[in-house]
Length: 148
Ligand code: ADP
Image 1 (cartoon, protein in one colour):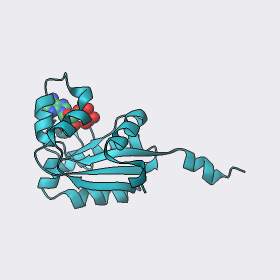
Image 2 (spheres, helix red, strand yellow):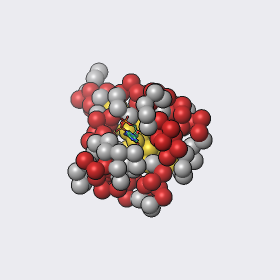
Image 3 (spheres, protein in one colour):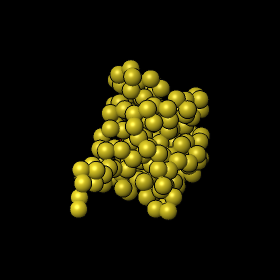
Image 4 (cartoon, protein in one colour):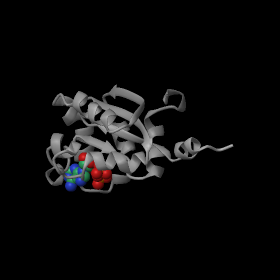
């Protein structure tokens, strides 16, 4: 029999978050992880890694025709990143709300990009933009057996 608890569990989502090289370099990894856990996300997977160029190009393949693609790939390979799989109800939207808008200069204080980002490119964090993309992006970095 289904209880209320089961109904709630069914709306849980997992999204892909990345602490980008600018934020790792600036020593903000701990601050950002603290905000994530304070906001009620559960960490299902986490890894420190230095993306290779093919990995960054593959991850951002949807942007390959955009004028900033080369700059984005260079940036994402410029130092270590922290990739995380985050679980919460409505996780995709909740994580994007916590991140703030793409351009850090437009991001309100209190959002991660508003507090730790620099501009439209060096914006501290990545988050999946739809549940469908979240599934693909989580699978890009984590095997099912690595998700706790
Ligand atoms: P978001 O990360 O908010 O989903 P996009 O999908 O539009 O934003 O862009 C992906 C990433 O590409 C951004 O987070 C940012 O790092 C970079 N980017 C976006 N627009 C620009 C731009 N005009 N110039 C340089 N880098 C950009």
